[in-house]
Length: 121
Image 1: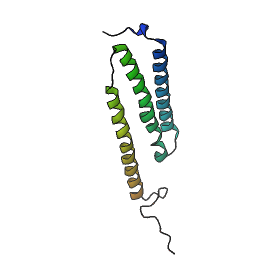
Image 2: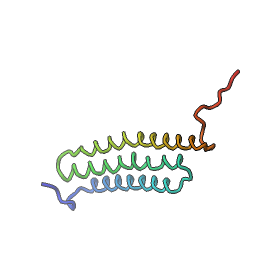
Image 3: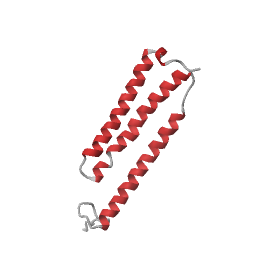
Image 4: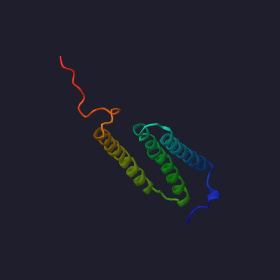
């Protein structure tokens, strides 16, 4: 049997609301950065803020809310957080390397070369 939402203690409502607002704000900040930053290499970093810290805050809100309402510990959201935290950096690296390879192949001079010049004594 679940507890009606209107019977939740005030501290739970405040904590869940705070985590949801924090997670939503970080996700919005990442989306704005994705739109506003000028180059692909700068743009690729902004959404990771929303997917890592934003997901974490929303996940904490979900764990807290459903643990209190359901009167049992709800921890399966942690798996979602772990998978998002593990896959986001890997995806970022793969996208950046693919773009860097493409830019080097096309001869774009704004990216570093594959073999930087070595200083010789």
